[in-house]
Image (cartoon, rainbow, N blue to C red; front, top):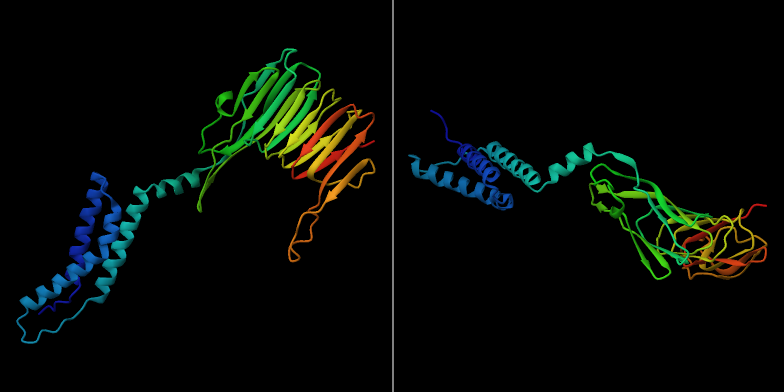
Length: 311
């Protein structure tokens, strides 16, 4: 005679009900979190019904309950795993994992910006924080150009046209160029980013202001004939080998080669805790003079300045 082991029937019935529910949840788009919340209570209910059914149908005077512990554990583990898999699939997490596996980085060309400027434009303002690395060169042409490359994950949309990453406007005697921030997504399991490496050509006789790009900048004014200003940059490299009669002024900025004899400045040591790193966090206010210093390059509130003026 076959012995009834409590749990065997519960395992079969629970898996049957769970399978039907998961199938219907996929077809009818039910909320799978409901199954995740109710799964273990359902197992207990089905197991309790089986116990009551066993006691009711048993012909023994003092029925003895023989539990199938293995079946109870298996149904719990398999059911929970099935619910979790469906939950991950319906929440889009499985798709994210598949996208992460297929993801690749690409380097593409930026749509070039080129604008001939009239003599009534005396100032160019560049702002925004969408560029990772920006190189600025002076030119004798009355032309402003922006071009370069960008590197991003294949999951992000390409920069198809100029308006996708930069906007320009002409107000009075000023040309405004604003670089848009590219999409950036990150989480514990994935990150999508886009990084631009661009070159900007600006006439040397036009005032230039670069505000709060928070980027690493490389500047070569090439015979500067006006005043340029940089504020809120990251690491800044200024090459004045081809520029005569210029003064570089810094304010609240670290200077890597500050020991150069042509610098005259006042150090402003930042407050540091005695337990913090002993690295040099000194900022400077001062000037570097070359020739007659007819024109100025101002650097404000930037992280680090390296000035190149090899003789």
